[in-house]
Length: 327
Ligand SMILES: Cc1cc2nc3c(=O)[nH]c(=O)nc-3n(C[C@H](O)[C@H](O)[C@H](O)COP(=O)(O)OP(=O)(O)OC[C@H]3O[C@@H](n4cnc5c(N)ncnc54)[C@H](O)[C@@H]3O)c2cc1C
Image (cartoon, rainbow, N blue to C red):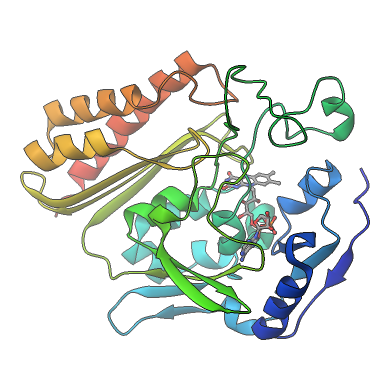
């Protein structure tokens, strides 16, 4: 499959790249590792006139320990770099395991954390060749106001499959968005929209420049289920973080991934564990609440009944493991 034509812009500095994004607006698209974008371009899902790559900007490839013990990760750090970091593994096991679970070694060598956070949503009907898609009408993601998965849907239900996103959410990370006008920082829990087409709050001209993670304060875990261990996107993921003891936690964050257009914070399950601690009964109740929170259509790649059973099992197993991690 051939790539469509585009003009390649490879700035030498962040400022130069942001200027190119400002100049070309919606005609420009950012390419980092290209491990997802280039496939979407071959499928003609993305046809940017200008492709802006920040891969020559050294400052974006740095991982730093912050004075408070937290970490700053440049958007251009590869997932191989992150997976190989002992500091990341010690401080943030959930994030380490999440990035290590992405694709294969070859994919992680090219893939960046910026690209993983901004990863486009996916749908079984849309992430196909143009020729395949021609056999039916378009959809919200291409050129009509229709969804082939939920016929009555008023929006796109394509899935957010980013592995790093749920882990970063439980760690309380923030992202820094840079543009020619300046920078803004926002918690990653506010970064995603529940809409498969317009799936992040980023505006044309903005670039996700770095991620900031606060110092580690508790225990965290990441669990993923995919059809095969290597190369497959997840059928479901779950990240959990707890500060304090199992009996009386000070804070809890539980996030499901690969179940909808945005990672889902499990409010009801959090309430159960915050109120009664982490024990056999609350783990069962939290897993049931997670399953109930998913609604009818939970994944576009597996039947919804399978997905509901998967979510319950994933949450239960991971919370049991997290409970056993108490020092
Ligand atoms: C075989 C295979 C298996 C895969 N398995 C997984 C998996 O298990 N889990 C998973 O999460 N992903 C998976 N992926 C998808 C992809 O490889 C990763 O998500 C990767 O981290 C994307 O990063 P990238 O740097 O290559 O992004 P790119 O492909 O360059 O970009 C992805 C998207 O993000 C935008 N973007 C990139 N960087 C930035 C930035 N800094 N600021 C703003 N926008 C930006 C691009 O415009 C594009 O829309 C897989 C891909 C393949 C080919």
